[in-house]
Image 1 (cartoon, each protein chain N blue to C red):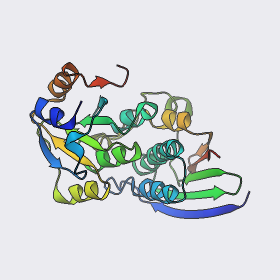
Image 2 (cartoon, helix red, strand yellow):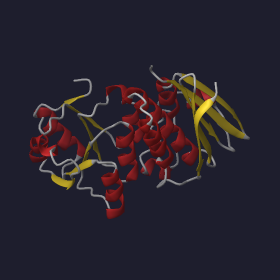
Image 3 (cartoon, rainbow over the protein chains, first blue to last red):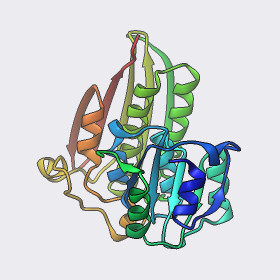
Amino acid sequence: MIVKDIVSCIEGEPLLICDPDLLEKEYTSAFATDLMSDALAMIHNSTETMVLVTGLANVQSLRTAEMLDIKLLILVRGKTLPDDILEVAREKDLNIITTGLTMYSACGRLYKEGLCGIYG
Amino acid sequence: MASILHKEYKVIRDDYIGAGKVSSDIKKTLSTIGVDAGVLRRISVACYESEINMIIHAWGGDITMDVTDDGVIRLVFADPGPGIPDMAKAMTPGWSTASDTARDMGFGAGMGLPNIKRVSDEFDIKTSEKGTTLTLGFKVEQ
């Protein structure tokens, strides 16, 4: 799924775009959690074309993405990040989209449009 | 097995904001010497989980990293206590004693130690009330 379609599908707003070509890039899967160890346990399924969907809006969601080589985060429930944490994200070349949808609704819409989970 | 690259770090108890800085530096350091991306991701995940454990469960501690001349990257996490009272439970996926503060920061899924063991090529843990020492080894693909 192309990132600009992901943004439109979840009525999202770009919070931080470090990759100027991001909106045209294709992402192939998503994983959703508020628990970072759950995300870290997905290491063997993680790819650079996987999106992390989370309601955890703090520096640890950024560090988790960094360890897993994830480049795109979707923050749900209208979460944003303060400037100092956005600066950390910028240093790590991360891209962040925020949506007012709940995790369930955001995932449901993305799945319906073809962005599958890591096990299909 | 001489060390050809050695680094040492201090980790501070309850430093939830700084948690992960050591792992980030280790990832950056190993990336610059050309460690394979797949191995590097395993090292990063194991290191980050272990660093978090020292911050949320132990009273801080020391992390050392060595790259040895026989192609092994070794990480040692040594803390001064309080030790892991039940190792079998700590190794059980889903079992956690994390505090509410740690959970608010996204930790406490109970996947830490099982995941660290799963992604490491060598895993050794020794614990008593005087502290825990976790030693991890990763073979660098030639």
